[in-house]
Image 1 (cartoon, protein in one colour):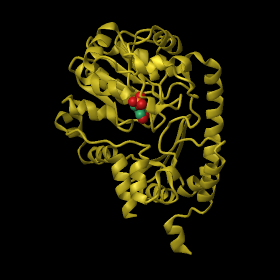
Image 2 (cartoon, protein in one colour; image 1 turned 180 degrees about the vertical axis):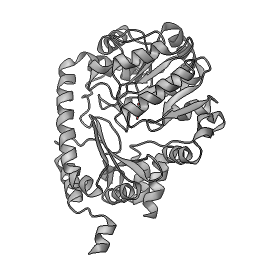
Image 3 (cartoon, protein in one colour; image 1 turned 30 degrees about the vertical axis):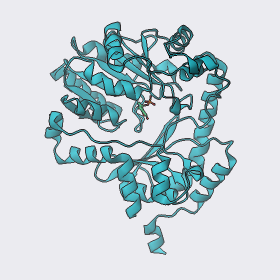
Image 4 (cartoon, helix red, strand yellow; image 1 turned 90 degrees about the horizontal axis):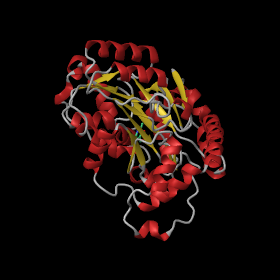
Length: 391
Ligand SMILES: Cc1ncc(COP(=O)(O)O)c(C=O)c1O
């Protein structure tokens, strides 16, 4: 178990510390401008897993991210894309605007770049951020010295009540919503988000992280519910399965885009990324097919994992298109993670509180038969240590 704990610590340390902190001192946390930012390591770190478990990199099955395992096929890239300086090509910008249904955009090398820049490009104000969710939002605002409050991010009603109360108390704040939330699956309607944006006072912005919105584009705020004080982030790598390309988009009013552009500098998106994305955005047939294939892959992966999940007796099962999360006792989640890692299968554990965690799994491509068989076989031999003790 020792190895497992270390490994979990390395991949989720920020979430853990945040959860511990939340139980230690809630009121201090609400005024945590003095809180130190933490180093966050993310899912998909096969190199670290390989070192920890002594299994070669090419033998791992990575279920620790929410990236489409059936990526957009990269065809021939014109050599000019490599040779020329990567000014934003009109075709790339037009295709992106058409795909997202909004032309007030700035391309960046992954939305992570925008998450890092935003605290320095918006007016100073308190920031409301989900307690559980992509931890970089909280980390970057805390690092900038902002006053950060964390809101409950599992239950829609509880979360809504919390946010409304805070906006009633002080409407001059920034509100960060990850929609849908990774890893809790929490979702809000575009109408609800627009209403919150309208209730924030001048200088208060609603930041909507739509990294996982491509499967349900009708729920995006971008085409019909966009407001001038919204900042919307769209990640290219997840749905298109090309996270290594490092591409994302920020949508905002012109003044904010200008500040972000100045902050991030020129040539943030390389030429090959622009060429591939322009083609992928125009390929509506691939997109439609990908949505269907992802639904099949999610169902299939869930069925392969079911023997493990059932044994863990989760309090909640969440399926969110490109990932599934299971709310289980932390020791059980860690045991399952360690068991799978010893077989070269990487899953993610995200701490929720002092007793519970989310075990999160990405998708397997059903066409990768050998990988599927390995997961199926691992799942069929999984038992928890307390079950073995009983024998
Ligand atoms: C919710 C969410 N937002 C943003 C990101 C950053 O993604 P990228 O920088 O690849 O666009 C991630 C990465 O996992 C994420 O889960």
